Amino acid sequence: MVATGSGPRPAGSALGVDIGGTNIKWVHRADAAVVARGTLPTPAAGPAQVAAAIAEIAAARTVEAIGVALPGHLSPDLRSTTTIPNIDGDWQGFPLADMLERATAKPVLLMNDARAFASAELALGAARGHSDVVFMTMGTGIGGAIALGGTVLRGPGDRIGEIGHMTAAPGGDRCGCGARGCLETVAGGRALATAWSRALDSRGTGNQDRSATPEDLVQAARSGDTTARKILDTAATAVSTALGSVLAQLGLSTVVVGGGVAPAFDMMRPAVEPVLRDRWRLIGPVTLLAAALGPYAGAMGAALNATAQPLVVPSAPPRLSAI
Ligand SMILES: [Zn+2]
Image 1 (cartoon, protein in one colour):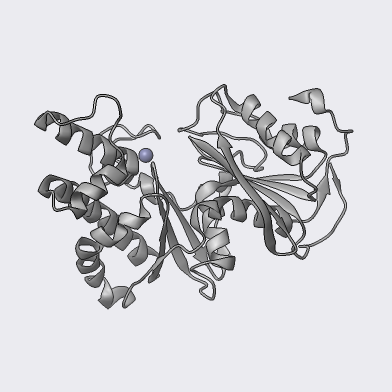
Image 2 (spheres, protein in one colour):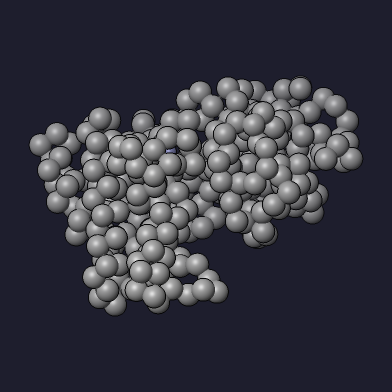
């Protein structure tokens, strides 16, 4: 590795890639604007194929650096993946940054996806102008991040802020992380969909051709289904309890909520707000903000991360055959 710059650089051009369990989203950011973006299915054959897909996107664009966001944790040097629970394949110890640098001859920086989402919302979105914020992403699972003093905290292996893995139901369902009863097993999108599927099956109205989705649940709750409402209320109580604890612990009072299930958050507000009001004496009124950047926030955060770091290029010649 050869460092060719010193200190943070101004916004350059970067490819930001957000790897999800279902899709890979990417943005090409240049001169502080998104000039192109796209989505493709996440290859199911494992990390080498995911790396090849990213190299292919990079080959078609002119960028100075590549940022990659992943739904999991990284090695202490942030170069390899460790625990990536919701994407197929063996990601433990996979040297994604080195592999992509060899394939693309660009500096590559990895980041947790919730921390990437938070970085983008802090710099460009709902949290712009705030410096101390808790972020929560409600999607298939529940991600989290914490910004203090205008910086998103990352910590060893990019592991700070896992609100979704706070225990909400001791001894409850097994979580993808290995523990039981984590918040996301109670209130994550997958858990909500499973609960709604069970409710439909018990009524004999389940759809045999298609699994229920969180959106189905929300739609049913909106149209007055009491069981659907009860499932959402249970989720809201779990979310607000965890969130209240986090805010009290950190002494913070601003929250940004995003992710695919976030549009349903308005239905959870009646259950969430009284719980957060009980925290007033400690932290004052809580401000709940809806994320502003949409589904490409994680990819934008990955691109920002890539351009905010000192420029480092691989010393080895590019080897496109490496992947
Ligand atoms: Zn967990």
